Length: 288
Ligand SMILES: NC(=O)c1ccc[n+]([C@@H]2O[C@H](COP(=O)([O-])OP(=O)(O)OC[C@H]3O[C@@H](n4cnc5c(N)ncnc54)[C@H](OP(=O)(O)O)[C@@H]3O)[C@@H](O)[C@H]2O)c1
Image (cartoon, rainbow, N blue to C red; front, side):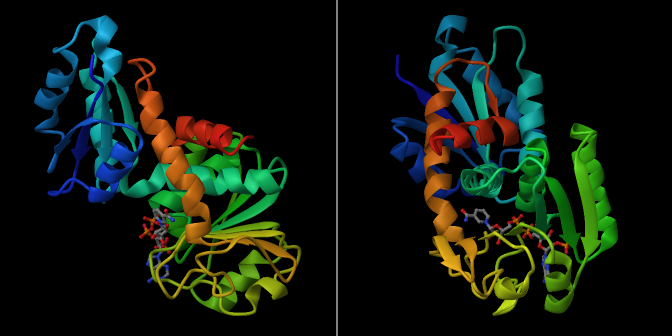
């Protein structure tokens, strides 16, 4: 029986990026749908679950994508609620690459140092990627500081993570200038920059000035990058004694994780691949 991947994209045009990755992961039958939302998805899910017998449903899977992560989360919720009993297929959610990117970034950090008890700071922590990076660091029992331009937003993100990990050691901080951001980073061993594309948080020379810093990951590839000392291509590059990764340096593992996640959807029919399961896959792919 031929494996089929159904791509449900919340944008009008189903992502060409996600389509290419699906094909590179080995998918031959890719059914792509755009403008998918909570109102019109039920019929699509019924088409996925009522066409093959329960034993063969592992040959059909769903990928949820699109540029709006909140809409993607809502769609995932609706899709999984439409399943019942054995009438289900495996589903992966990676709107805007949020889960694969965060999973790859934290797995890379874990490759270099013990995360349990480490002190990490996440810049741009309130966005979909930053929140997931923070959540995974909390899962690894690191002590995480969330940085936003506004304390209220950092607090909401903290509360959302604490709702899932009540024991998470999370602090929050506000910073809106490079000087304030650099000061907030002082004393942290890890810094992750997950700000909006083209937003620079830390200016040139910052890495050498941040006391105690061991590892820095910048996920913004769009100039100006998030940490001026890091180039997008940096991959375990030593700069002033700090191990540095740029967005493209993380991108290699991210792409492997994305493809591996797609392949693993077809192992059985009851997986829901979102932040944590995708992180577990990232650890495997990274050999951890
Ligand atoms: N390498 C990859 O494969 C890959 C894949 C996906 C995403 N990315 C990158 O990962 C980064 C994070 O993505 P995302 O979707 O989570 O980002 P996002 O939602 O666009 O922005 C993240 C945070 O940046 C802060 N921010 C926004 N505009 C700002 C401004 N003008 N000045 C200062 N801070 C500002 C906001 O925090 P506050 O409002 O709370 O301050 C926001 O919550 C992006 O750079 C994206 O391009 C990389």
